[in-house]
Length: 331
Picture 1 (cartoon, rainbow, N blue to C red):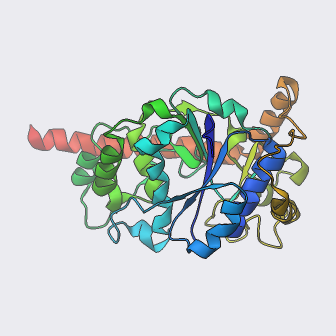
Picture 2 (cartoon, rainbow, N blue to C red):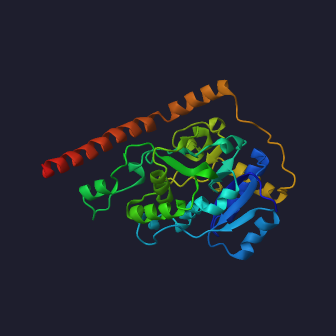
Picture 3 (spheres, helix red, strand yellow):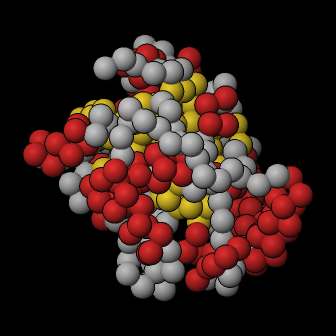
């Protein structure tokens, strides 16, 4: 099989294979993706990979990049999520651009614009994880000065990105990239709320390119918690991450407003034929409609924006107080 210029990847362990099939189907039918397709498989039995191989989807068996058992995130997240960082291995330099989309997403429109990134590009995260400080936490056993020293050189109020969708130009990979990521994972494992997300934010600190919000749109959250009408919940990529509020369902939950769309995509996965890529049925709208769309979105999220800026001010105040105390003790 010849290698194409660009690569679309999703990640799955043995529990998310249906979600991965749906994701590939939505990319195939709605985005008309003409690059390679790859499943980043974490501890998936060989027999379960046969469907993907028959469809021409590449398989990459990926190990976790994590210090197992150290971080408190282990109680909430599988170590499989840290397999995303294996995408920055030298083997992926065979493609010009790598686009990653989580398996808990539905792609509605073409992703071609993502192939133009020159570095690493992602969408800013949503409250309360919208800052680096929001993606980390201080263990009770760690005092303030130790915590601040750990993050020396980083502004904890800096805007952070979400790793549900990202794209990068493979030129950023060199022979030391994996080693540096492993160093970060070991150093910050115990203070990570979202493991691979914090580590990548630290690695690409103030060098990442910001993608428009429509490339990582938290659909059920906006519909359920922010009361945005379902017909106004639209984006290039709809994302359905876990949420602390149990009222927010995921797209494969039968009672979720987007379940029928997810199910239809899953059923059409059987018709994927990578030798014949369809033309995408729809394209993301022009600037006039986008203006109205963004205005409605900001109105729906106004309380989140307010909390975001309050959180930033509070975090800056706490950091400033710790630094002042340190300076006073050293005087």
